[in-house]
Amino acid sequence: MQGSSFITLKKEALHNNIKFLKKKLGTHVRISSVVKANAYGHGIEQIVPLLENEGVDHFSVFDFTEGVRVQNSLKNNKGIMIMGWIADENIVETIKRGIEFYIFNIDRLRVALEAAIEIGIKAKIHLEVETGMNRSGLTIKELEEAISIIKNNPGIFEVKGFCTHLAGAESISNHVRIQKQLKTYHKLHRVLENSGVIPEYRHVANSAAAFVYPKSRLDMVRIGIMQYGFWSSTETFLRYTHRDKDPLQRILGWRSQIMSIKEVKKGEFVGYGISFLAQANIKTALIPVGYSGGYSRSLSNRGRVLINGQRCGIIGMVNMNMIIANVTELPDVKVDDDVVIIGMQGKREIKVSAFSDIAESLNYEILTHLPDNVERVVI
Ligand SMILES: *Cc1c(COP(=O)(O)O)cnc(C)c1O
Image 1 (cartoon, rainbow, N blue to C red):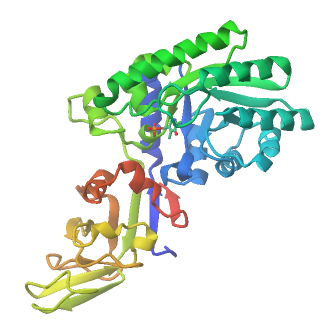
Image 2 (cartoon, protein in one colour):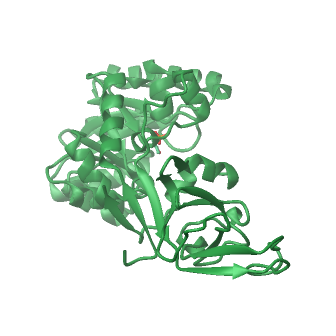
């Protein structure tokens, strides 16, 4: 290990998750694998080839740079869809590369039109409609305008998809709003089809919607968090099954090692300031990971790591590059011993969710804060 920590990716767990998703979603529903935010912190360059091996043939990202990274990570040509940001000057390149992209307003459609005419290559577009999230998407008026632009410029656009995003399918409290959104979506879809423009894929569902609202699966689902082995929320999991056995497996682990060990006398403070006072003689281990490496400062005096198969509490403040763990109870502990920050060691496990409960944030947030420059190893 050259770096101070590394991330492990369990191939077998990904295989399990994709198999589960395919079985539950059915063969007629295409899975678009969402790998935005560096594949939810897992690493685009590592995860995309694994997904390709599992037979995934469509990928969703947020921006142009991620789209290019996905394309460069694939062995064979697959569908890639940019759901968000593309600078105007990158539209030509996006079309040349055959990457699909969202049309969420008329400006974007006009830029795409000009670019496609200029280079003489069809733009592969997904028309995103506004159905009640009020974030992005064409209103009914804009949809009608978009339709007339598409029809007045035959041979310029390939309408790959017609889509929207649901505002919080992972919580029952949004049920009424989601139902309204689905209704609006279908109404807008009729407007499109009546005009004679037939999209190849209708898609609205993320992980939560695909499981909580099976009718929302349509032709394609955009699955992010579940392929990495997490449910969108505890509620989503409980709605799926009340058995406590989780059919999903987490792919990601995060490990470091002990850099140094120290004895601290009763009555001494440990680390910066006075947040930790040794109540007895203790033994501490220094671990070379800190908030600059993705270990949240809010885990100061609260986080836990696994060393020698045991849980050890973090004492004192999380530093920029280091944390200190209490290893008083580990008689055989020594420098270079493995430290598990996320994942299994022996019978014990530190889950991302345990991590995120303490840090009061979502699995999504913890994962995507994992630094890009930490080595990823497929195991
Ligand atoms: C991130 C995202 C998804 C995937 O969401 P998950 O909850 O991770 O499955 C789907 N659609 C859009 C538009 C997204 O931005």
